[in-house]
Image (cartoon, rainbow, N blue to C red; front, side):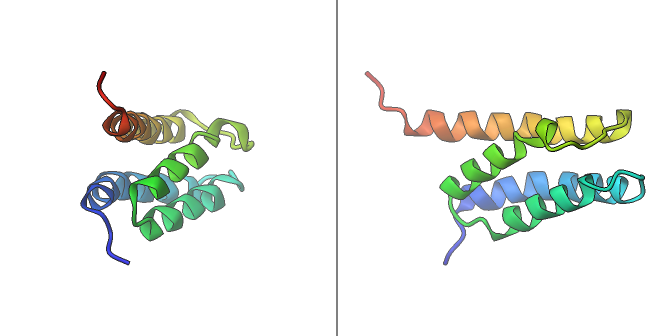
Length: 100
């Protein structure tokens, strides 16, 4: 399957930030975060179409509810990714709306 250009662009923006977050939380005593964010990274890498990215954004939005104990740094790193995901979701949803 060919990866859509918009997906490649999102992967290019998000992947390094997500990898930095994973690296940081892996060095902390927080057991849930490395697995949760690594699963998100794998899903992001495997995404090929815009719909996959929307599903990814929904999974990412559950970050605050999976029981991760964030410190100031990990929350700032995660928050940056969440802000990117929000912009991505709005962009994809807006492009599907039909003008009146």
